[in-house]
Amino acid sequence: MNESAIITLDHIIDRCLAKYFGKNDAVQTLVSDGSYQEAWQAFIKWIKYNLDTGKAISIQNLGSISLQIYNEDSIIYFNLYDTFLMETGLNYDRLLSHEVKYPTLVTNFVNIKKFTHLDQIQLTTAIENIINEIREIFRSFTNFEMDLGILGKFF
Picture (tube, rainbow, N blue to C red):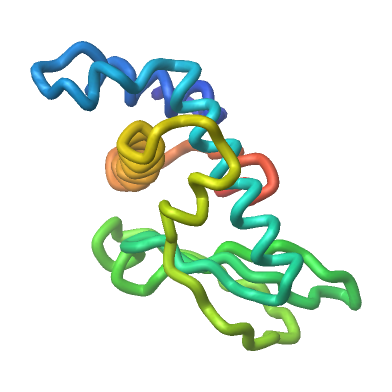
């Protein structure tokens, strides 16, 4: 990626498909472009539901998502974990906000399943692949902007 590339969910899914789809693992073969899209939308709905009910979400080895107060407005805030920042060598300016502490949930694929008709294996595989690809992009590229919809933009 040359200059400042904009990476969207579609780009991330394309990378997942190129890396995993049609490989020897039968599970990976079941996860198509539509499955990735549907799994991610279910994940977002689950995150939004939990944020709306006063909980924060922990995404393993990446960061946490919570509602925070910034300039008197409630915003969705994605806080990258220090271990991830050290692993990738990223510098990260944390948002100066009025931090609100919430009970934190870990990613729960059984509960996410309630937001989709995908089977449990497809759902889990797709979300884990997307998160791994997000981590890989952060490790591999230096000049990019990543748009993750309601989860925000990284640049």
